[in-house]
Image 1 (cartoon, rainbow, N blue to C red):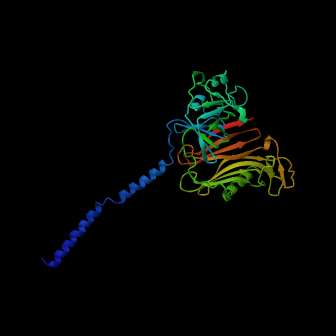
Image 2: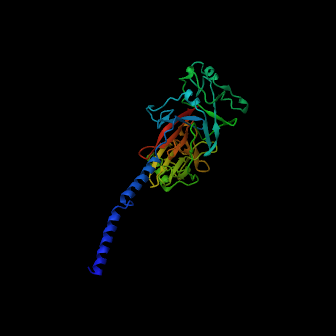
Image 3: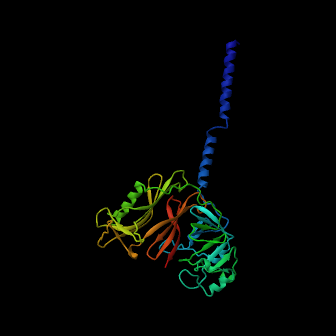
Length: 373
């Protein structure tokens, strides 16, 4: 056999061996597909609520909103008109917790193992039942009112295990306040309190923005639908952050009528004196520009417009008293997605709302608490 033929045969064997080696290489397309599957699974699990080992309760500004129990939201007041989804919350469960974590201005202000309640048996927002005040006194201490907060009379040192006589005592679901003591100081007007150690404010929020064009147009569209299209738009708050944990930023916008120095709504228009009104609204803008109206209260004005020197008109009384304020934006159930807490004020009453993203990727009300005078 010639030397050239031997060289060609050797080259042929080398080529065949190389092809066989490629077929057995572990860094192949199936391996890449497996890696992609792992990444997708990680993204899915990051938006799955972390089921706590015990029920988690939430308080906004002194008010029990509800809880997160067995991977479900529970509300102390009904979130719909049928009153079908309200949940009873009991004194024994709130007091059985070891501690509560208190937050204000998106920062922790400490841990509390003392609950402060008014235990009177009559009046607005009081406990219901026979001799409730006497029964609660057994598990609490008299609160020193020298600080001037005479509305609260008993301090409960956590955890408290109440007896059978209080096993069915419910937390009042209207105008009932709960305060906490941190380092011997009563914490009033706290942003959030909960019995689980969480990191509720994990991402940066830009809250000093102007309303977007899409948000302004959504408000104008609402004006048109309610025969108040000559009303001047006004936004009180605009935030931007990655609310839904998808890697993109979204907007949250709150709109309200301007207010007078006395706090009454001002009827304000675009120069015309008819088809005006008072309004409150909340808009959520997705990163693709689409708008979801979370809440709206539009009240057309039917009377004669009597302008002041600033071409506005102050409206007093319950018919036109409406305002919406942002309470908190926080990841309450540790699923990486922000919940939104707001306060709706009317004439002598109102309610707190908590919004959470549902399975369709839309915000819906999951907790509500009512208040009034």
